[in-house]
Image 1: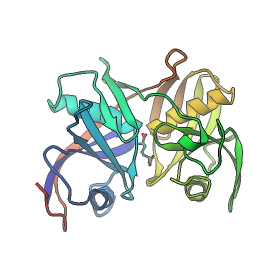
Image 2: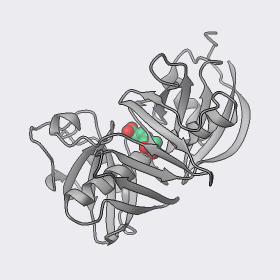
Image 3: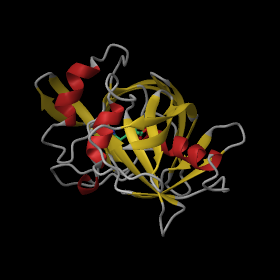
Length: 282
Ligand code: ZDP
């Protein structure tokens, strides 16, 4: 099948965006694996479809590069909001997206950045989810074959395990990431953030993403990072998060308990792609 796409990134976390009202893949997981391949495909951390919705302006479905489906995504939301607006799919600068984790609300700012109301972080064990009970999972020690890690767990719709380290630069992500992502403590696996506190308004974070591995940035991960830092008394509620691919701003609002994520969204190129072995449904 042949389809048109647009390639975007948010701080180097890159995605292939497709207007799902025009094209439907027979198998989204297979399409994501093929499209995201950096040697045999377009190359991206994820494939994301924008679909019509009854309850919101759009529905968004997010597939990781391994074909698994993510409930929620921060960097993509900023990209998709601009994609929808700039392609004339909506005239609104504030819109609602339905995701598997509920509604999120991006807002286009005048400087080109996008601010997203990511909703409330969930802290209860069963909402992350993790394999034990409890109101919060704060600095819980997990054993892996590469050592012990103290994880603070936050769900932003998708699961995150935040680990505070003295030096984020020296973390061997590819060595430590997989054992934590697939640890039995996380029945739906987890995204893993290694975080260094720079000061009470600034954090340095590097991420190992569930289903995608090392990426240059993670929006939901930045929100989870600031939430975890506040829970551990390490920072203020408003922080800059420096990632490998850029800086995001996060605020965990005291007023409404929602987390607000602000950052750039950049289009890189547009094209058409032919996927072998994928016959169009419509
Ligand atoms: O939860 C997951 O499986 C993530 N890999 C989804 C992608 C999250 C993302 N990097 C973000 O910015 O929130 C897109």
